[in-house]
Amino acid sequence: MSPSTTSERPHTHEMVVVHRVFRRESALLPRLVRAVPHGETTRATEIATHVAEYLAGLHHHHTVEDETIWPLLRERAADEEPVARMEEQHIRIDRSLEAVTDLLPEWQRTADRAAGEELASALDEHRSALLEHLDDEERMILPLVADHLTVAEWEAVGRRGLETVPRNRLMLALGALLEDATPQEQAYFLGRAPLVGRLLWKAIGRRRYAAACRALRAPLDGGTGR
Image 1 (cartoon, rainbow, N blue to C red):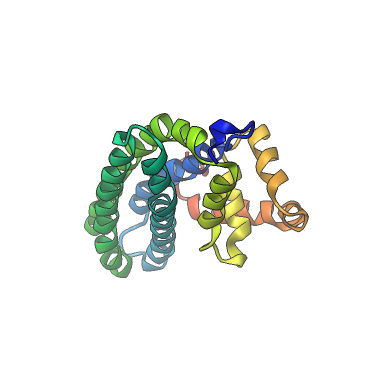
Image 2: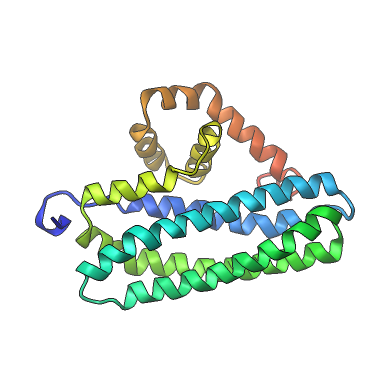
């Protein structure tokens, strides 16, 4: 059954909020790399770990789309061009992620300034490709999702998106999602979390996320990384 035949439609704005995480982090990463002093390998390792987590998270996000959303839209939507565009952009982004992955170990090992600039430039190029894709996906794909996927199918996409997040990092993942969310968006996402999750977020999660951000972003101007 398609949502177009029911009164319920997928709440696709969830994806916009998720995209904000990738927009924010992709802007922070090259700045964090450039801020590491030459030879400070301990700090380089901390940042490299964060970069690797970002790469894995974005790769999983796109894999979920490749395996769930695109096949359903190819089957149900009359115009396949937007899906083909998404697939082409995913390939371009994958190549940018490979470039970053190739450069990361040497910089992590040496914290060499020249290697860091090369890595940061690769991250800048990655972000350029990513922003084009996110803009197009929000403009071209989310309306198709609202018309052609059921609520249950969309919720299944969301569950797949969370399946690789370790339990001990769920509070950090929630914090990343809520950081740039409006009060209404925060209420929506917290309202969908289990009661124990909401209690944990208020008791320890919010402070743990804030502390992690301070430790990661402290060298950047303004302290917030933005």
